Image (cartoon, rainbow over all chains, first blue to last red; front, side, top):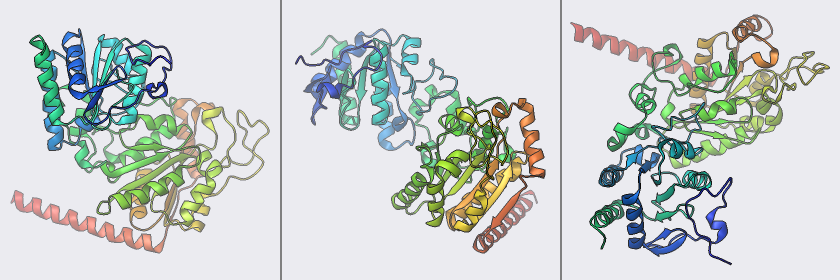
Amino acid sequence: MERYRVVPGPEGYLPPAAALHGVELPLPGQGLVEGSRVEGRTAALAIAERLVSASVPTFFPGPLLLWKSTEEALERGRLVREIAREVGAKVIPMPDYRPKYPMIDPAVEINPNHPNLTIWFNKIDVGVFIGVHCHQANLALKIIRGGTSCFTVALCAHEGHEDANASLRDTDVASLTALLDAVRIVKQGGE
Amino acid sequence: MSLEITRMNPHFADVMPQEYTDLVENGPFGRDFGARDLGSFKELFEEHPMCAGCNLSLAFRIIVASLPNPADTIMVGSTGCNSIAFPQLALHNVHSLFGNQNAIASGLKRGLALRFPDKVKDVVVVAGDGATADIGLDMTLHSWFRGEKFATVMFDNEIYANTGGQESGMTECGEIRNMAPTGKKFNKISVANLAIEAGCAYVAVVTTASPLKISKCFEKAVLVAREIGPTYVQIYTPCPTNLKLKSSESVSLAKERSKGTYQFREHVSPEAEEFLAARAEKTEEQVRVTSKDEEMHSA
């Protein structure tokens, strides 16, 4: 069976969960790029390349990063803003998961129940999720892969997301610092 | 949720939508707002997809504004019109399967007590008459028999409004509904009496004609449930869509019923009465101390 590659969509209504196609989560120290396990450093460089070359790169910080400002969240927040500045990315928050009525304002927020609205409205070609609870991130990633051509990145604090086009696991202050370094290296023309 | 979760990460304050900034700066978290202050603070339940003149949404708005401690409250809903309201609520909430709400709330309340032994966590069930008195009656009654410490609120529109208008156990005898054309053949279930028999420490029956009464009863129900045992508040919320009323007429109907077949009733157990009296005394004392302080400052 040909290996399933988790590439940007649109894959159509109800895209399959990548896990159903045999895509496995990265092991400690690894990341995922298009469904393949790679070294964490390789994944960080691939994400950095995407961010640097994107027309409208955008960070989507979720509730775990936006609320309850622990020291860790503050530092992670500072680094996310720093990376966003470095690549000229927008920051559009996902403050909660309510499917708001009549609809969210896609110019200023993103929602896991219809993330495609924000992607389409802002013409986002690379979207980075961070601080979003696992099941809501999976939902958003699948919808985006189903209906848009946006390249998705999941900077996960746990085991990574197989439905993202690229994902890091155990994302903490150190790995965000490493991603910032990777972005600077890519901007200077690579290693 | 707790109060600290309502604090914003300053690195993202500039990109947060206005709605959230308003909730943090002028919302009810950690502040003493109630139904009396509606219109003067950012509410947790604002835009909603309910029909014009919906009394359920009115009751929902009032009880959400009357939560004694919203930052530490989780609401449990069920299938029905209220499940369309819940997704708009800026508060942690759980949607249960039809009728399961009191079973879910039992587990939730016990889980929260284990997870946060030093914190007060309120659980409030809000469901329609179908979920409470028909499909979930066993779950409702057994949570009361077990003495589970949470408040149950029934929005009683006397109909399955969301599915076109079938009669429910709470429909009055003889009433005709869109999908019950021969009329109801048996009496309205007296869930309030069942609640008293089942051991609820506080029970109230109110209508949307008296918003402040709803607020007071609901607050008592949450506080008594926190300290003593299960409580029940039944609110008459007529449905203008199914009863074919103009949107402005539904509250008038509630007013009319509140003088006839839906009169205000309240049952307070002796233990709950003692608790509420002690609490009122404490509040009065606090007010006295505050005004004394203010007098001293102004002098």
